[in-house]
Length: 393
Image 1 (cartoon, one colour):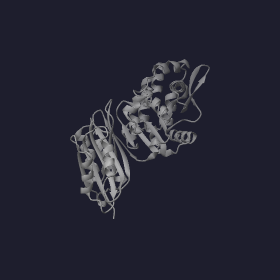
Image 2 (cartoon, one colour):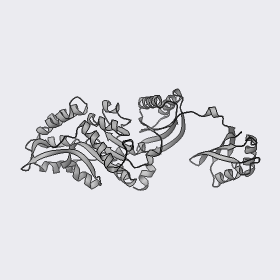
Image 3 (cartoon, rainbow, N blue to C red):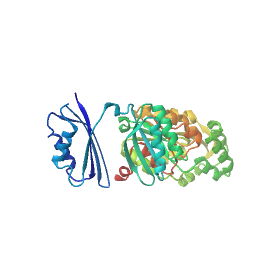
């Protein structure tokens, strides 16, 4: 009958250490030693290497330890432990990916997260430090028996501890091509475009109050948009060029788009804003896919009307599905990012919906929430580290 052992090597790392260990396993008498799993982490030169092996019944933990000791692995302060792994020690269930980030991830916040795991009968199999600036971010592989309960408890614990959090299924899908759809106003851009147009037209206060009510979900978006656009009647078309020149990207927006493109992801923008303002900006970024509203212009002036169908809350979700079909990715491999109530259907439809500095009603419908001001923090939820982002910057 086969036996399973866990060999744990710890101490100051040195070149050739792993080679010596694996060579030692070939010298164990009474049968073959088959490696079934390996994990390693090195922090500031201190190594922890775990090797799971399966052996015949004639191989004891003592014979493994003797073979390893004779090889010279345990010199220079390296310690080795060989323990028996019983089948009941494994935690059943599939894996989830938990990503937490904040300006500072503290011991108290991590205690909350790991306590929630324990309450659900879950364990953490791996931790990777994805970033330490401008935010602190950790990704964890968590295994537990009930994904729904685990997802709810982890999300609740992380948010209570002041952490931004994403809980996703683990798997190879993360390495496949993705479509990443962003809202424009207050997500890709720091501004609300229609508010800037209204400033020029002298109706900023009226437009802003309607905008805020719509983003809180208190007004139907289509109705609110028509009301706001009607206030712009008579403005010269040149105001759109002036507003575009004033627009500011959200910190990290250019880095996000550039990194996505470099990794083969497809960025797109689906906005309740206006094509006439957004299209030239996105062309400069190399973003090819845009769905937004069209302002009607007559004799060089805005008429206060819109052309064509309105890109509203259901329209955004429809655009996401249309773009996914166009670029050839399933909806499960789409990511949607937005801040307003009109983004909710899009966030819900996407494989991963991220609420970015969003209203509470939006966060409640999203898979993940970011409350830091850096849009490129989205990359951490895709498992991309700060080091990888900057390697090709």
